[in-house]
Amino acid sequence: MTSRSVLRVIVGAYLVLFFAYLFGPLIIMGITAFNTAPYPTVMPFEDFTLKWFDILFRDKDMMLGLQNSLKIGALVVAISVPCGLAGAMVMQQVYARARSFYYLVVVSPVLTPGVIIGISTVIFWKDFTGATGTGFLYDGIILAALGQSSFISAYCMLIFLSRLQRFDRALEEAGLDLGASNAQVFRHILIPYLRPAVLSAAVMAFLSSFENYNTTTFAILADKTLTTVLAGRVRQGSTPAISALAVTIIGVTVAGTVVYELLKRREDARKLREMRTAQEAEERELAVA
Image (cartoon, rainbow, N blue to C red; front, side, top):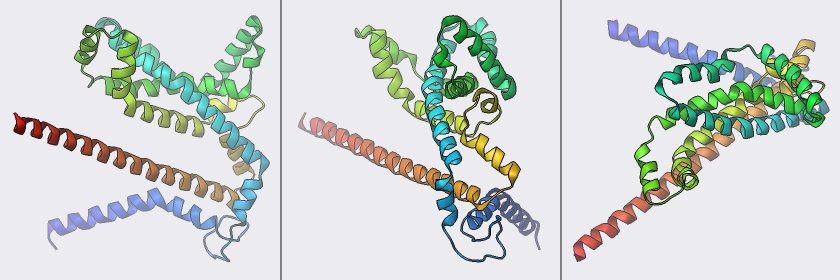
């Protein structure tokens, strides 16, 4: 056996172990979701059933936690994406000497433990709402969204910064020279360019909020999210209903990915047709001339 053959065997074995480690738990969990055994198990596979999905959707605490997680995720997206965009734009405008200090300040929440962020959020907003008479803001869902947004905004800012570094500022200057206002330049030039980054930041913010536990545990007060409910259930002992939840989430994620890819390909095909049409029109004009 040559050294190249040995290398191929080693690489192949590594890839098999890697994908087994990556997808093995998902496959096992998917099998347990359809097994009639009362405890999550693969072998022996007693019989095929869908009762665990029915039990899952009838679980009031689980469904309430899911609803709260979706609400908090939507609020986090609504707060973090604009804040992240604003932070990235300020980063491009501040003096070069101040950028290091500004970057340290806006990224510091990412380095702060979630427990500290959750406790600080509750203490600050309790005093603030009590002093300003805005007690309606002292709500578990709102506090969780505010606490999560304090560090998720930094992630969004990094996404926008990576996109803005490739932006040609001459386009803005050209728009201003042609009489456009700053608002028009922002709406018609910058936002279309940042659209992929906006979508990426929104998805990242929602997923980061949906799976967050440390900050949410302390900021949610008496309310509950899906992650806090799951943590309590796992302590009491796992059931196949949790496997059914995992299968449902995976299915929704895969479906969303497929839909996004189909829409993206359709959009790329449309742009390609427009480019070809424009080129053909230009060729006809040149031929006539």
